[in-house]
Amino acid sequence: MTYEIFGESHGPAVGVVLDKVPAGFALDMEEISRQMERRRAKGGLSTSRIEGDVPEILSGVYQGKTTGTPLCAVIKNSNTRSEDYAKTQNLPRPSHGDYAGHVRYKGANDPRGGGHFSGRLTAPLVFAGSIARQFLREKGVEIGAHLLQIGRICDTPFDPVSIPEALLRELQQEAFPVLDKAAGEAMKAEILAAASEGDSVGGVIQCGVSGFPCGVGQPGLDCVESVLSRHMFAVPAVKGISFGLGFDFAGKRGSEVNDPMRVENGKVICTKNNNGGITGGIANGMPIVFQTVLKPTPSIAKPQETVDLSAMENAELVIHGRHDPCILSRAAVVIESAAALALWEMMSGGNL
Image 1 (cartoon, rainbow, N blue to C red):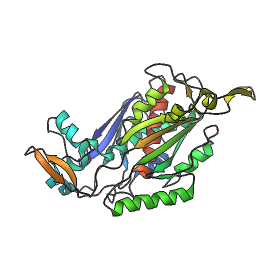
Image 2 (image 1 turned 180 degrees about the vertical axis):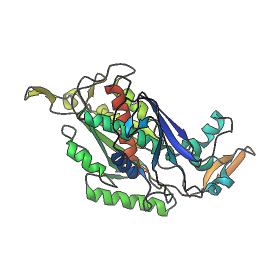
Image 3 (image 1 turned 135 degrees about the vertical axis):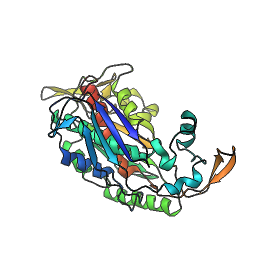
Image 4 (image 1 turned 90 degrees about the vertical axis):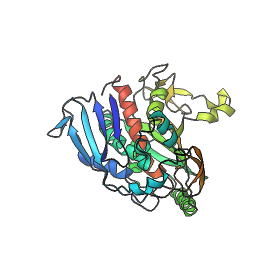
């Protein structure tokens, strides 16, 4: 399976082309719409730019079933305010892709709303991931995520040994997915505090996968961790990923963190899952658990030091427009979608 995302934040539309989709698969458009709704901004804790996010399928589907030819869908942009960027198009935002993109594309890139580097491009990613998710569900694989940390506030982590499918589906129903509701309220307060100061806040999303079969994957460059990481880093704002205990392995001894094994009901299981369901680059049958860190939104209202590319001199930037003080609640479904695309790639041997 391969996919290519196209479009710009303030262009006519954003979209995706999925290649090597098997023929004859009936798409559940209601489920796709539900997943798209999870990512869509609704105001309050997120940007005030509200888009419909209704995918229009241009090819690859006939009478509700996939044809096996490239599947193309577009999502129209209808609520743009490009004038917000007119005065700052030569002032790259610190920590954003503005400057690197300007150099990479020789100044021909579309700077409005971040152009191709905008979080707007995660809308077609969710559409593509929703299709992959449907294929995975037929194989008994479920994916769900929650907000493990926002700013200084932390949620309860998954029990890595047992992540019920029902829990993952329940998290998908939540607009602000957390395991500890009190922690969730404290996270919301953290976001609002940052917003009131013209600032933003980052955090960590923890993703869990149940039902992924043992033996999928291989050591080396195409190990399970590598494929998942490649898909995660295609998501704007993701700056790190860890599996299982991740960096916490560093301060431990093997006797503390090895995952003991036993036979239960004729099946080999681990009584711990510090490795996050992956050993030797191969899924070992335990739940896959990983964490992704997303940086704070670079577009903030506070004055920032930058450069004026037209004059090639130092400058100050004050950003206007509509931006998320925290993207994590909208990003949970994006991380799940990227995971679905990665897992289906591995289960299908590289082809959907």
